[in-house]
View (cartoon, rainbow, N blue to C red):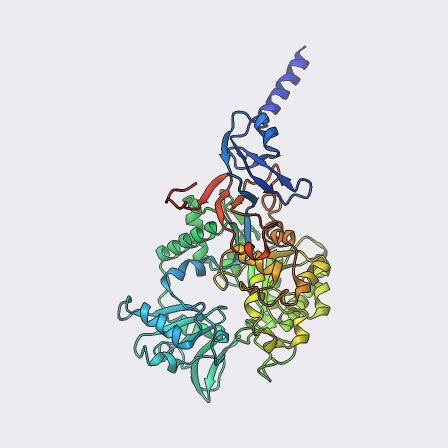
Length: 559
């Protein structure tokens, strides 16, 4: 008798540990779960802990959980929370305090935007902007300091190129550099553009620091405010997660403070910024750290191999078609790069390396192979960020080393007007080659590289599916054999991105036991006309079963 009572008590306690009811039930929706076992549903149920209890048909879940509060999706389309696998949160957040030069069609238009902004600044303040792209201008050549000196003879001007891999500065800014920029010397990992021996005003890759280091740094308060701006922009775009590609230890401490205060509304997967203090700290944590809230974690290091294609800094195996004698730049020397990879491997941190050109990618593959050795068979999930131009014979090596290709679909559609000029047709066969990676069973994680591109993941979905610009050009898509299906595109921003951050047991799908991270959209990305994918909008964004964003209604109210 005592034995049966004991077993009854144990059974009762075990039952008490399992939630018998959902606290919240979402209904009146069409749900794309991304769960192969149940791809479509009409209702979700979750508990107070923010974990999904059930995914299924509304009639069934209403009967199972009669006391749950209800969220009416009003016929919206629900997808798992969208994850940007490569963005720069601080860069996004500080845009509101900079001149936006994106889309300027001429040098003169860029300068007019700068003049309009400068009137709002104190006399001694730096004029800072971002987004110029000489490829959009009629002359398609780099600008010069002289172009800026006429308008700003005294005020220092510092303008990042759209890719972040070059800056355009004036003479007043160059005078503040710690070392004279004229002469015939070059910094390691960068290039000072010169006219003869005189610095022209364009600094590429590591050369940017020669002037950037003279600028006043952000205060801790400014840094936190910038992050808050970035969070708001991200969740409004439907993002429930971001892989933040490179954060300093000082900036990471500000994120920790925001996490402790409960001010991070989405999941951040942080990467230490190279072989610096943040990686040292991460190694002291055993290569992995997660905030108790689960909203902030660091498990990776972001390294740089080469520069960018637009500024001709991507490292190529043969010369640029439009700049003979130039094969790009190794931002990090191969020797220093291997030292950093070996350090990360020893402390069990994930390695994520920026590689654009085919020589840059091959050097990364060679280094990964040498450092991993037999460990390549383990579940390291090392990443190549961008994997933009890869020799065809190197693509299978990604699978052999069990790597992840972290790619940004909008880079293809942004670069396509001039990529052939840089590379020639033959090299384009391995450029932005999403289907070739899929054919080799290489996991893809999709992102945007914001603020280089827009934070809006729907633009990435559209670019991946069509390989066209927003006007529908070129007809049929640019190298259309590399387009992906809609479900593959959505997977890149959900399951694929979750896997790239070791988070597939938490997010990336909508299934019981995973987090109630989802987005309610105003249309179905799997069925609308292709061009309409780019125009889809989030009605609301949910993390841990709580709305972190609701779109304003036309009358000013929120749904």
